[in-house]
Length: 270
Image (cartoon, rainbow, N blue to C red):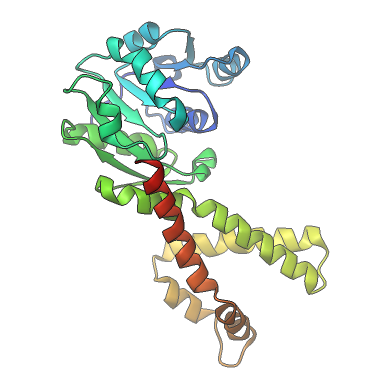
């Protein structure tokens, strides 16, 4: 594995902070070798004091201190940020973007045509180092660059490599997925209340049930259908509940939600 020497984080929001925390806690890089450009002074000072990283105020300073530049910014400010940074980017820089929906070809128009760029789609569980990310690189990317990105994003969860034309599907599934899960979680809690449980107890049980089920799937690596079968007894309570879910169209609705979100991601990137 290639050693990660220095990282510059453009944007110190929640996802930027998650990556900083993950890299430091996994010992990928020392905090003193991470530079952060964050325009909000209080936020920058918070990151400096909490993680002992170096706050910087200009593109020149950040690029001079960093080999890897991570764009942890909102999609709508990608163009002005790239215009700010383009004249300071060197051939030995690796540029990584986590801006949702911004394709590689869009970023390439603002930088030198030799620039190595990786596009990553993470999700919000990265905030607790349990994210699911997918990445793709442009034509200039080397295998060692992808390995570096894999190390960084594995520090905040799991990371897979996919062709860029599948990143919209990734957005529809794992990028937007936490929203579906939290909607289902809320419904489970309300169902517990409807069945007679006090809300705090319903919430505790529902959250642990989702966590435990996901952990079981991760650790056993058994297909969801097999795991479902193990908790579904003939004429029992679970199959009765599943019948109600099927009658309500849960499976088809979730599939449609993933497809719709993927379609929206594709539209935003055009």
